[in-house]
Length: 103
Image 1 (cartoon, rainbow, N blue to C red):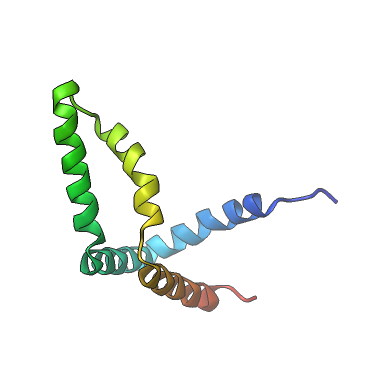
Image 2: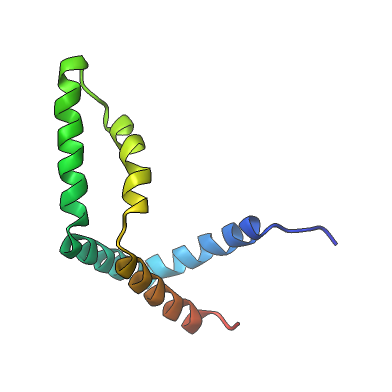
């Protein structure tokens, strides 16, 4: 029997689950909740300000592309999502998955 990695199993499950979540509106509800929670925590303003500062600083050297800006800020932004927000959204997704998948 061939060995199947955890990543490949997750990838195989992700696409149909995401499609189902989009079709029934759960994806939009979770995305809106995440955006609201990040906004209320100040996370969005923090990274918006940082991106503006980086763009202004780069004006003297010819500017910075959006792709470069995102590549530089994304790892930091992902790492600084407040743990309370992260846990809340994970809980919402977990409950949704428990309703849709028998474990």
